[in-house]
Length: 241
Image (cartoon, rainbow, N blue to C red; front, side, top):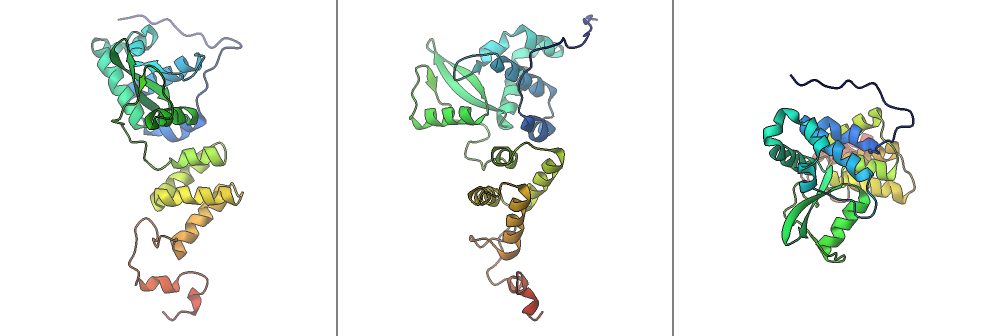
């Protein structure tokens, strides 16, 4: 049995690796594979130490990374395949972005942390607005970039840090309302300078009760002749039931 060196604790003034709070509140609960978690956190650590832009790590680097390899010792014989699978899952969970780099006449998989500047970088490469020697966009995206913005990302970008209580409320809202409604409600709140989840949830509740401009009520659309529409809203008490 391999002996492990015991860990005595962190040193004073130890360097730290920045990881968005959203990772712990909105992403980590969905990660089932410990190898995906190890690879994702290792990439956060690697890229936090890099200078320049864009900050990218390649699969070839990870395949020869001794520190990461030690963390997956139980699968040493199939290490590369394990890392590939972990990377695929991290892209599907939208922790990472994926690009293909043309280098020395061959393609190589490269990964970026899914932060706003990196998303803009990838979008500019895809559109042709940005042309960098050695970079080509991987057309076959895992997870799809056309998805609606994640509710947790909308919250952090427009309101602030997530708390456990807010996370639970956002999860419940995702079950109740269509993604396009949630995005529209955030936009309306920002436009009105009412950056609070309480205000946004009231917008969603109103649309769910009175209908939105797209004619839908709740997650599923109802028929236009739905008699219930006449007993909803401010003057519902005046309608004979």
